[in-house]
Image (cartoon, rainbow over all chains, first blue to last red; front, side, top):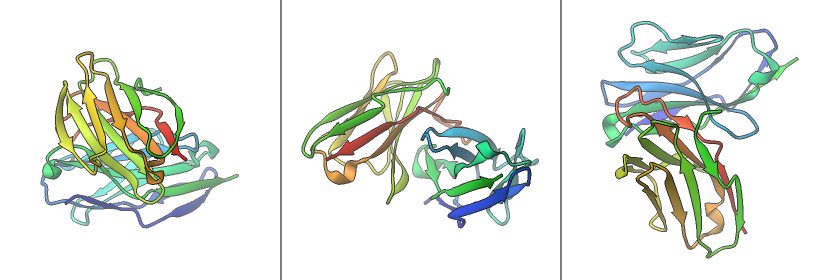
Length: 116
Length: 115
């Protein structure tokens, strides 16, 4: 079975500071992918960043980077220079073939609030 | 804008009724996924179609069904609706529906309220 755990229901960060959102995962597959999505209050799901299990380097996309520690099964999202528009729910998700398809298994999410 | 469209945006109906949610994937994407987001269950995978055929099923109730048409748009049918079916229903699409780098792009969702 695939599982994603996000232990921080809510986080606060000062504008322009960096913040780390935690994500741990569980899968018996050797090949898998990890995704982060952002969900603003308007409700849409916005893809942020991807990390493959065989990628040797941590993924980066602009102000987003992924701190991937395979042995610890963690894939933390780092947002640098936080902006007010970063206030949203953030979901970590796992895609693996163990369930028979590469559908996404999501965590419960972390609500990030950026303080001016 | 992800390129995935969903209609309607909002739907209010009564218990026992039947509704149809519609999704058009991004141009060129062959795979469509349906997800349900509710307060108590979070985001859950329901079903996947690839090029017109069902590929995988998740926690989809027997009262729910879906299909993907030759033009690749998909419909999710929800029948005998219950209060607990109230949720945000997302459609997502991807190019090939396989492989761990199966980047899925989500539509804006349909918010279903069952009264």
